[in-house]
Image 1 (cartoon, helix red, strand yellow):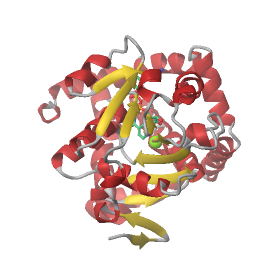
Image 2: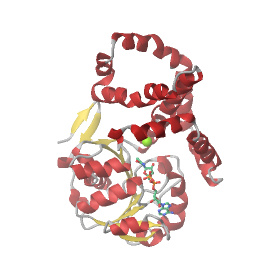
Image 3: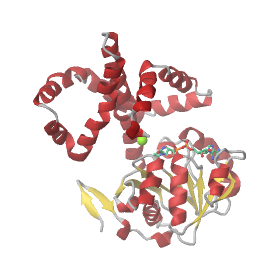
Length: 335
Ligand code: NAD
Ligand code: MG
């Protein structure tokens, strides 16, 4: 049953009522990373799920082969009681204006897996519409895989608008239906989910980690060390160390490494992540909170993604990728 962890309420399957979804017409827009996972998990829980896609979408066939009904976005929204929007964040506002709102039934539930568009005011739903979020704290493919294995990825949920009075129950049922109630469903709000999610991926998980690995690799190879050594030290071992931290915190990791490594950890860490780095992180957070990041990201998308494409291309050419692809070919355990 529900409990509290450090002030946050955590719900499990026993607290959720799947009947809040039964008999409702459910539409999932998009059949990508999150879309296929939500749709298939709910379908296997007995729900009536339709997928909405663009005409000619490459995912159309996959969804049909998985036994789902597929319609064009606008058609899929018509008559739906719940519409979960799982298309890329940068496209949602336009699709909402053109295809969703004009076809959205009075009193329907509109749902998201990330608070971005609602929180930054890019989508402003009609007054009669209930709005909630279920955000799995993991990639969509794990939401599907863990569900099939009998476990699930923890989910955040939030309610933004509740004219019907039961949106929280519907949100909890959704989170349970996709498998989140097997590991925990945590209550949050759109602002907190959006801002912490963006900060985490930018400063720590994606932006922070890749720059750290890449810079370490460059320093070693530019000093003349073998690229293979540099790759193992800076990239491959990252997972082994992070696994220990994940299992038992910094202490478990530091217990497992040598005293030499632990001494070096304390001796050097603060010289790399300095007071200036912390200041830069605070600025990153301020740009997220002010909406500057959201506006820059959406402007790039509108212009055909020049920033995204240029950086994606440059990153693919970095020597660490060539070294990695050769080495991983030799790692039998990765196949
Ligand atoms: P994705 O890029 O994997 O998939 C997007 C899907 O939308 C594709 O099937 C695409 O064909 C479809 N699509 C594109 N334009 C469309 C349109 N006009 N009409 C209908 N369908 C259209 O996206 P994703 O990574 O699953 O992200 C979806 C949402 O989930 C986003 O809000 C994202 O922030 C959130 N989210 C994603 C993850 C993740 O694991 N990737 C984790 C948590 C939250
Ligand atoms: Mg994220």
